[in-house]
Length: 135
Length: 146
Image 1 (tube, rainbow over the protein chains, first blue to last red):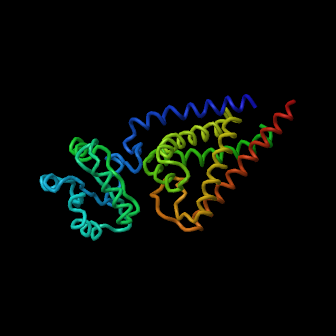
Image 2: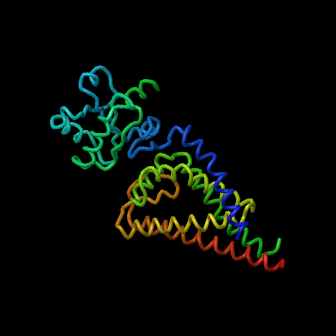
Image 3: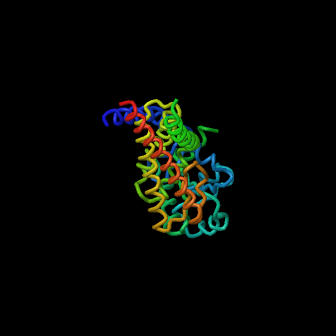
């Protein structure tokens, strides 16, 4: 019994090493906060992704991810119909705002889930800042 | 190698190959696998992330150990434990009417019907039976030596 336990523990510890590496370096690793995805995970979902830009309209007009639709809290009621029109059930929705520290994307994602009833809504880690850095 | 040892190893190696394949596919896309686990609504998101990062590698190492017959009994114990856990998750999802993909071999998280879940349950039952057989043969061969 002791041997079984020792062997099992050793295998679990061996598996922990690549798991820890994946947690830090894997490009498609999941985010630790609920519903967050990395830029690379979201990119891997293309073309089945609907990008939602949760930044202020002025920033959206300056530059945005190709195909992204504007939806922020200020213009929620006016902007939401365009989002729903563009969304199709096979698409995952990925919301982004300016940077890692902004909260707008989380709030928009929550409202899309709870109020608009969309099933697969995620927030992109790092937001627009991460996208620009990767480009 | 005695026939008893040989058949026991073959059963374990078959399961090992399935574990290696399934683990490798999931290790390639831990993000999608975390989503799949989350859909079972059994554990909170951070736990899903930890499982999505660790479990595929446990499958791979357990699979390799079963094939190579190294740390064999430990691998058999982990294999049986994992398969029982998978069965529990699948049966609980089915009983709660969750229309989800099992995520056994990675995948795109497409919703599935009840026959899809039944197939996954059947696969797990077969794996569990093979592991139990391998463990039994291993136990017998030890007794034979005594």
